[in-house]
Amino acid sequence: MVAAEEPTSSAPLFAATLSDIDDKPVALERYKGKPLVVNFWARWCGPCRAEIPELIKFRAAHKGKIEVLGIGIEDKVESAKDFVKAYEMDYPVFIAKEQGIPLMQALANTKGGLPYTLFIDRNGRIIQKKLGLVKKADLDAAALLLLKN
Image 1: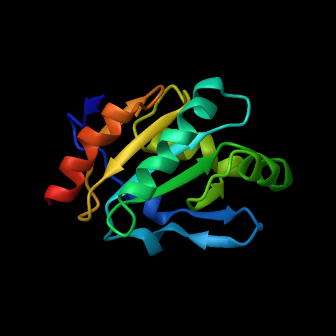
Image 2: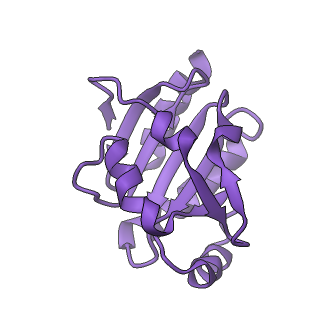
Image 3: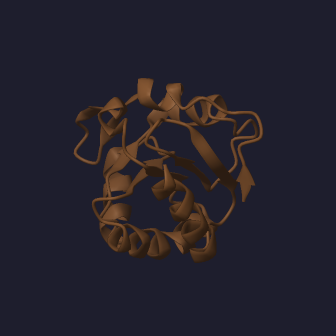
């Protein structure tokens, strides 16, 4: 896990409007002011699939205090919707379509690798980021920081 050395702005995230799994546009600014775990994933990404159960458990443990958002680097809403259902992803999931890679790059993931997870405090500061599989220990450590502010 990497602490955000140079503060990366969360502005590109909150400026984005992405499709939900019903293909309706959602402005992500609606999540501003809440502690967030923002996880970028794709169906074909093995580590992405492996971390979903941890994200589900984490959200349940911090319900109402920290929100988990999933952003699928996918083009087709239908196939992503089937994936979300199959993995029982009970947190808000958005489909990035052509905005996915540029959005990740604007959020300091210059290589566009997956999975990529951001931890954003209620003030909109990215306090940590992780490229690669997020484990329970990563989430627990981030929760302490997210709930501190």
